[in-house]
Image (cartoon, rainbow, N blue to C red; front, side, top):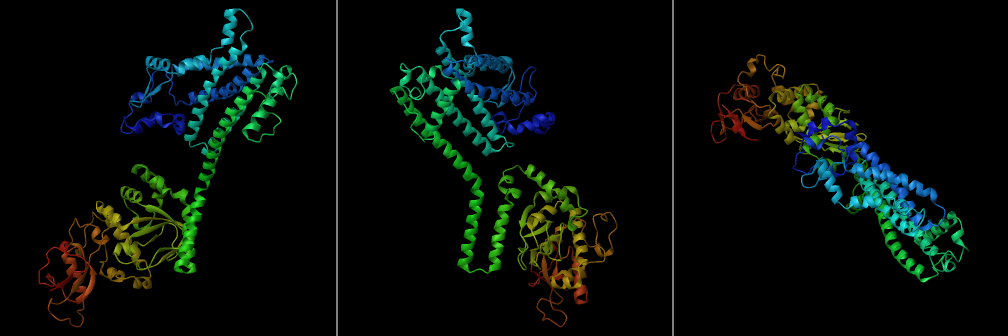
Length: 606
């Protein structure tokens, strides 16, 4: 089954939820998902199902409560905390239900990268895994079970307090949530990392504060403890007061402030402080390292731009460039950084060609098909042409094309404006040099911030070859454009006036391909390639014998090689006033096939 058909089977909610799916749930490269990848058995839940994700998120909120209550209940169990014990039973009930639910959740087979929806396999895998005994041990209410079996309402409170610490196993769900959020493009990565660091810090403060209070509460000499020196008979004090003192000590120690008002009084507390401060060294390094990475990552673009500006200024100063050139270099570099999020070449180049083509079609298809040169062309040709185009941005007063440079590209203006007959959106520049294969006749400069799309002229000519009718339409559109230019403009462009004078009164167009051709085209072959005009061959023609001296009126003429011998004789008749019947080279060899000729060959019409 192909992937497009699979996509059609998903609901909108499933597709939206794919943004947060871990890559481990997707099939490996080179594998094809089968029918069961998305269509699971009855009563089987997909791990990426939106409702199951919401359930997992709800459990994370309960994990936060368990992470707070477990150390708190251990430290203050001898004080009044009965309401928390009732809440624990409700929380444990939700996790017990999740254990049952896990037997119905499909899992990923790491050997085939397919979701396994067999009930028996799911159960065996879960039971054999460490998660099942730990989930079970962290959920069972040991104290209530003991009370039922022993028949006593109280007993062994300290043991049950430590057994309740097994609930901290649930913290792995928080870690999994943060891992998923870090890959979710809908959530800020910096915010996710900062929240994770905050949660780790708060839990460390809470856990160590509770454990430090537990040490003081169970010491053989309560008055010889860190809190006993400050608060007399703290065992019979309020829970609020004890918790406040514990958090105060933990935060002061973690932040390395150390006011000295609360400090270790016995050996046990000193040993605990040693390990806590060693832990704080690692935790502080972890937090500072992560925060530094986040800050540096957000400033990488700014640093790169400033370095580029400094290099440009140094280069301009060293080579004594004019102020205008230096400003153009700075403006272009600044625009490059500002439009980086719009171009994203490093992202697009890693995408499959089909996706890149779809992006180009969405952005530029309408602009290209409205351009004068491509009006009336087939949609297939325009689609291929657009897929091969590249987008660029130019700030104001920057040269896009220089006069007399080789015609490597031609451009279509998407937005903005340029100095060349006051071109606006949808206009073209550089096509005259490309079509005639001559140096660019004009300098094209942006008037304001402009976006253009460009295409390589070699790729363009290769692309036209399979599209004979579209090639004829391009020639027709280009000819009509040249005829619409003013006489002064035509005189400034080499070969254009001569090219128009050599044209017959009527040229076949895409719509006239089935009509009778004029007598002027009877000698032209039916399958002549449109690229004969798109990639012209320039030759010199003479109206005399190869060894004969040049006479008045018979100076050689530089022309674009026509499509047929008859057309060449017709052009020579217009140039020299006589019709020839034979074409020879300088060495006297007769020309029978024009396709054998090359640029700058000299032909003698006899």
